[in-house]
Image (cartoon, rainbow, N blue to C red):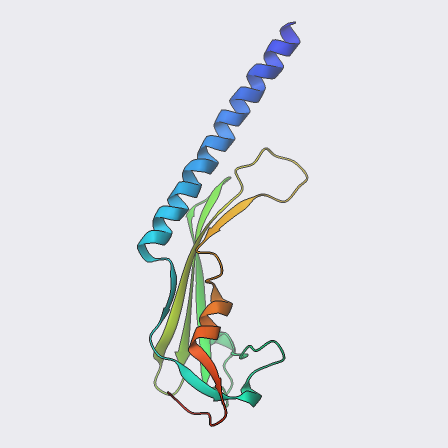
Length: 151
């Protein structure tokens, strides 16, 4: 009978320790997203069809990998707002035009990772805003056209 009591007690303690912090960080992710999360486009660019790949994406390099012929590049950062288990992260991506270094758009996302009962499985996560990451930012900035050039 004592073993059952201690198992129940340990289960309650584990649940209270892990899941309340996980829920609190999920609420914090939603709060931060409401403040500044999402995609902001400052200028759209019309590009000819040959600039798009088979998945309708424009391949642009990371800031550190720019080559002389590249017209656009992106920069991104990940900030660990809370480290540990669970963890709270902020992802910030920006796309620039190289010729004048103009910021064309940016995307900000927040996520909670972990906070689960330890085990051999992948940790759970919660991210917002959904479907508004880097790929969505590129789709909103780069628009397929027949003529090309800037809008």
